[in-house]
Length: 625
Image (cartoon, rainbow, N blue to C red; front, side, top):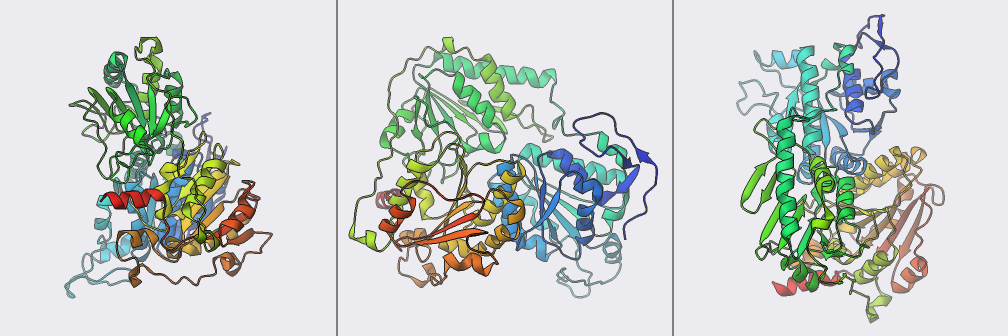
């Protein structure tokens, strides 16, 4: 039962940051406070993903409070907790900020933990709220055996169960965890600490909320003391500014001395919200500085005259890209994410450069010297955005003495060669060539972990394409609910950019039920994705690794994918359009113009692909081993 509020109201001070109703009661329920604080932490957030369970229902009820709905916040169901965590990650990446997923105790939070691990690995700012048993139940369990549903019993049947058994599982996949209790002052501090840490770290964090705590009365005056304008105690201090200027001057000094400099932009620039600052820096550099992106990044305008290509060691988009990068005398690596899926299986080589600078959100390495951005207390001296902006502000392009050494630019070479098999399926080289030709500026391009993903390096992107993937964590099926979350974010922002998903049939069978959410929420989604479902009858990338004809790489290949949305309640021609493309001839007939259908309806293309067909890059990788 919700608490009775005091009738006196608080008139907030004039502050744009608060964005609260004009009249707020002096005391509000903690459940309302949590939603309002989330809205302050990310004013762009309008959707909160959730799965109801008896231990979080009390909190979810406050999502319908007039104080909360006034902020435009709505609760969005997903089909299961794993998908909910994936959707929250996709939402976070597309909205460039905090996202939220709410689950229940035990069965809910454990189903979500794989998605939270994905967000941790892939730098997604997801707040996972878990509704837990009441404070009373927790207290009772200290003195007697009280076995309750969702809670596993103790190993020793004569001892009470451990109510915190699940909390111990998330330490390694989250950046912060806090449990609320009956102390309002402590609760308010814990909520702010969790939100600030998630925003700063761009990684998931946890709030464990007993089911009776949302009813506790909380002073609304705290809402007008926002802690989110400054995420670090160092922000704005002379100490932080001096450290920032010192490292900036060191980097620019090496750049000015270089005769053959290169800049490599990686995904952590984008995932830490510094894309605008990267664009400004790149725009100010002369064309004598060669530009590269990474497999995960793809965040530099590839139409620029000094953009060379995608560098990932032996897996680079072209041998010339590899040579031009590795023979630079100065390497500036921005937002570098060092993992074998991004560095060509550890084949990247910085050894030939006289000077190498690696900029990570937590540290900067200048040759053998490390400058720690993240301090012992967890706070950061400055953000990556501040560093890139400082580099841009202090950069004197005229002092760069390097002259342009090459006019080389990568041109994709993987053009489809006609084959007898074209009558039976559509080869992935054909699909690659299609996207190289028909991707548009500002497209949101989402690719699951699958055989096709290895060929994305060979697709040339137009300006401002946003690539969303989960290739490091590599949990197949991420992209279907991830796309749902990204779609919700893009619609919440009111954007009309095209949303394109490329998904394999094997991964899709893991999370296919989330396609039904596009049907359920079509009334609030004016912009829906174009889905390329590559049906190659199983786990094709695994077939290339081992066991090409083994049953463990098979799936039920009889799914009627183009009819799936009808099963989920869709009406073809109203909620969606669905097509089945059997071969190259049908592909050319349908996609020859490059048009991908009306965004007001979900466009679903089932494309029959070869069971053993992969991008040429995969075969090259396999033959080199």
